[in-house]
Every structure is written in structure tokens, then in C-alpha cells.
Image 1 (tube, one colour):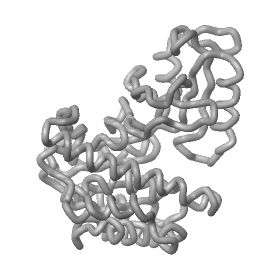
Image 2: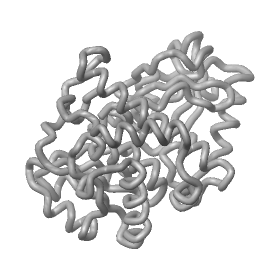
Image 3: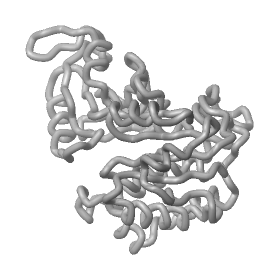
Image 4: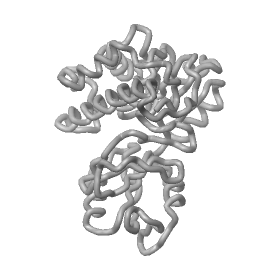
Length: 301
């Protein structure tokens, strides 16, 4: 916890209460509908949004505990004295807002949000609703006043850019600003576990959610020894886990386990999350960790 922003920037009281209330009564129906990821069926989206709100609420509680020394704390990768510019991809606006923009705003850091120019109206609507739902101060979370390229060019060395997208986008942003740049640029998930029916079932469940351009698309399935032991095998070929993961550059490694309560792990700088035969994850903490572009993982700000 505190891997990006110093823990002294604690969650705002009103936003902490807003998250608690959203957790208790849910997101209002009109907001849920307006914020829906169009790739997801209307029947599925409320559950996805509730999961993200719950994870954000747990993050705010854990950050508060970390400040009191009751949760492990990391060394912050940014001093927190400037502004944040969050650059969104073309899809999943609400999920990425909650994971990579809202945490800074909840802690009182001014955040501006930009994305593809053709989506400026949609992004502005999502940002406005999110700010209202989280009871943020007026200036805390807003759409950028200028297109993304101009917003990047206006940043100073004290500022931070959080890029969600392709590695090339993060590199382009890095070359255009003196601000600190952190990117979450993984393009898939990799599934690994002992060969057998459970691995096949998990692969089928994860493969059924095919969304073009999604960072959660299934990018590979590998059989392992007991408890994920090396080498990993596919089509009779054994490969070191680190080699598999580095080549895939995933958003996370999904590790088929016997219990979703197992803590996240790490393989070659990427987060390994516990997964069951239905494709369900035990936690979202650390998803999106990117050893290439520096994002430490979601819900660790």
C-alpha cells in the first residue's frame, strides 16, 4: 500500500463515507446504466461495477490502516506534490477511472482525465458521475480541458501521468513530458496450473469473455507441476515461467489454486493472482502491475 502516493495523503472523509454507502446500498440504477461498459451485457454489468466499488472501498480502508502502521506500506514512487493526468484507453472507462484515477482524487490530489479525442464527451460524462458518486470536491476529478496530447504537453516535472494502453503509447507520453509517467500496458492474462479438468474448465471460462483489445483476454494457457512448479508446459514443450510471462507481457498471471484465499504472488515482475476453475479471482489487488512501464498494480496506490 502507498506504492505511488505517500500515505500522508489520506482518503478524504466524505469520499470514504461515500464508498461505504455505495458498498451498503449499491450504485443507483441510472448511474449504473449510464456507466456501463458497452462490451458487457446489461445483466452482467451491475455485478462488475459492484466488484470494483467494493475493491475501491477496501483499498481506502487498507490505506488508512497502513498510515496507522496496521498494514504493510511501500515506498511511494511519486512525491504527490503535483497534479495527476489519467489517460484512459478506448474501452472500460469506468473500471479504469476507479482503479487508476479515482484513488488519487479520493486522497485529495487534483486529477484530470483524458483519452481518445473521439470519446471526450463519453469520458466527461463518466468522470462527472464518478466525482458525484464519490462526493469529491469540485476540483478533485475533472475531464481534461484540452485533448490528450495538449494535456500531456502542459504538465510540469512535479506532475504524474498514469497511462492505460499499449507500451508504445506510454513511451510516446514519456518522450513528450517531464512529468513522472507510470503505465499499465499489459495486453492479456496468462493462465497457469496443474494439467487436468480444472485447468481446462478455467481456460474455457476465461476464454468465453473475448473482448477485442481487452487487457483481460486470455493470452495463453500453461500446464504446471504441483503448486505451479516449473517448468510450465504446452504442447509437450517445457519453458521457464519467467520466459513465458515476459514474452506475453500480461496484465496478470492467473494461478489456478486450491483456494481463492491464497495471497497474490509474483512472477518476473508481474502479479500472480489466485484463480479457480470457474475463472473467478480471489482478489484484484496488484492486477495491471507493469515491470516495463512502472505501474505497481491496482489498489496499491
